[in-house]
Length: 274
Image 1 (cartoon, rainbow, N blue to C red):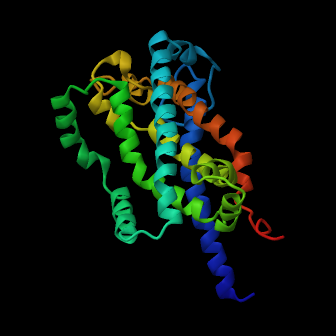
Image 2: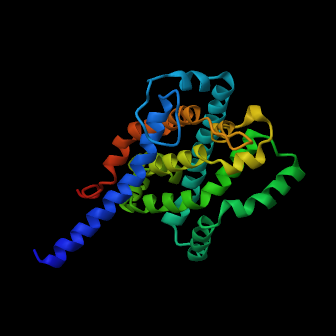
Image 3: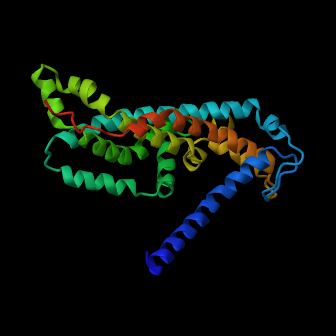
């Protein structure tokens, strides 16, 4: 091994260590501050160890905020996966005349910053009387999630061999039947990946519900986290850290339960033999 290779590996490892520290330090602060009575911005072992911050954030209003977040996130994920599946099927299986321009348009739409669209969206929602509604807020989240979901779903669907679908047609299955009984079961990891991606995006979305929802009892958890910042710049660090841990648990649990599906990936190597 030459000196140049050794130096290159050392630099790469050093960069990875620095990046790892940048990720770990905020997590350490959240964990230590949540169990400390005198939490501050510094990372320090909780002295004394206390659960008081969790008692303070476990209120009825915060419970309703989490329910609102579940309603928005699960509804958005389910609706997006269903619509994206139906939309991705013809893009994956048929030779359409405007297929390529349409795909490029979808790809372009995935790059549009949602913050730039919120002002006209708010004006439209306000004119139609749709503001301050969880359902219509979720509808916008579905619409804004669809371009990337369709793009991902098409790529996953492309990985399913068409021979399996054609065999189902020979056996008398309809197009819808082959989609439900052949394609979707084989692309369960893809469905899970898209669903998790959309759920996590909706769960952590602060700006859209902050603009479109005006009643505090309809605010999701991503917006109510703002309550720990006072108008005078003071921050309740302990409560903020405890709330952040509770806020993160659903996403972590979702990743743990879905890791078995995602770990399986796609394995169609011998699916069309015989």
